[in-house]
Image (cartoon, rainbow, N blue to C red):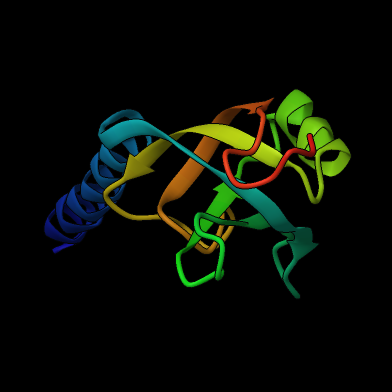
Length: 122
């Protein structure tokens, strides 16, 4: 009986490890998006995560929500500095997320400041 219980628990742990590895190492898609950075903040009660939004249109009707992993310190600092500016984000979309990673499936890996196609300001 103990051997069967050990095998069942071992199988469950192995499945959990495989699921985590799949979510972490296999991206669903990769791409770039550009827009005005309208929000970037650290939020959460139990697990604090970095969350942001860019507006991809003049009216603000198209909002792109994204997350940034804690290890991306350079990206976090640039997003803080570029608040209110037009930015281009490079991101990875994952199949799913975990509560300690962020609220979205989109994780920004690079950010650069761009000229706005709508306004003559930087």
